[in-house]
Length: 196
Image 1 (cartoon, one colour):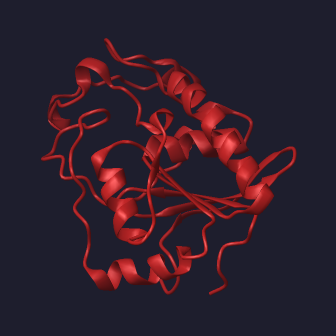
Image 2 (image 1 turned 180 degrees about the vertical axis):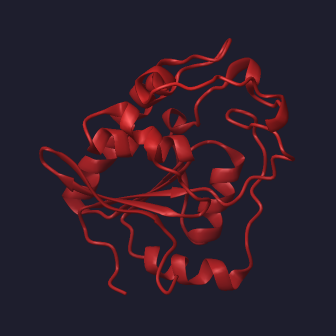
């Protein structure tokens, strides 16, 4: 498998979170890192990344350190997952049923004391665009973050933030974006690495 191209922005969702069946947006829980045989192929493929950036979340930093064991991890506060406010920390079975919503309405929905997906996308977009510019200049750039961050990036590539909500993002998967002077294009979503 060829390594990532120099103009790629690689969004890696953290390894599965040790969330205990609870919603954890801003709740800082550790990662459940898989065995070495799962990590090694992806680690090898990512070795040529020119820059590594992570969300401050423990689960992201731990994943970044496991994938890039000899590299310093730069942390960017803007890459945090969506703030689910009063819903953060609730058991999945305790979350309120929002009913049927179209993507635009869901993207605008704000949990009590939290932020909407649209607000989160607006928060992370400047960071993603700056990292995309770095990838164009001499990438590839690896970003270890959250499902919400990857969805925001996909919405950015599609010029419609709410469109990102149409994607499922698996733990420890890579969302591969090609960086152009006028925006982003999608190479792959939920890519599990070489040989997967």
